[in-house]
Length: 306
Figure 1 (tube, one colour):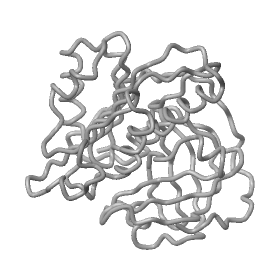
Figure 2 (cartoon, rainbow, N blue to C red):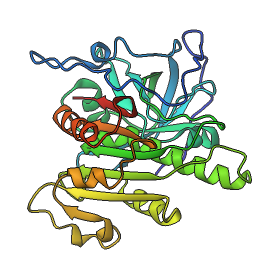
Figure 3 (tube, one colour):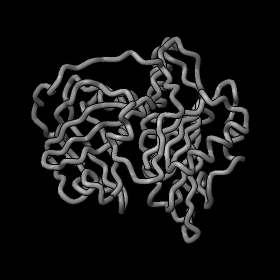
């Protein structure tokens, strides 16, 4: 990874506004999928919350996360803020289409280093295509934060047990939430119990192959750092894949798909807060299973990107 060598960024194009939202987003039905055509990002999110300011930013690191995914490390303006789970409108000079990408980093990284990270899958859509074929370290872009899907508890809020269910690159906002949950757990310990008390967090993550399980090593490491509090199950769906090839993740990885039994083991109707992100058919099926297991609809939060 290249170090952040970006110069001081100019002021944003518009005045910044800060909206005090509820600590836990409760919009579980914010996306409607068109059966006729694929809507672009701005259409799909037209009714979602957005900050007013569009901030200048600069790419200061590019990592090949997998054969199909690149991770960008982006230096942002000092006034840039976001909540774990949110996305950005991604503006590229010379590219008409506006990208929409969830942050895969947490607010803590932004506070420490002034950067955010985006993991983008290879695609023909112009913003993703630019990232995979033309983006270089030093490239200038602009971003605006939006989204009603986030985890941002206040210190006095009751602890929630998180169930994070991801399919494919739907891992991005949920990885941000998981990293933020780990930050809150460390902060609670460091403050002697004065800050927010994090409950448990379980990640259910399904991808086609072991290689496409993004961030898998960090997810497993967090389960080891917080034994009994954080845990994970990683699943690969292609029959030809052999999870046993990666010894580091072998204990928590299996071949197959997420089942109702996987969900049942981590659902408490009174305490569980479930965040879902992935293809619409997966979200719809898992949402119904969670409802059948007694989890209230207002505790099932989802983001659909396809």
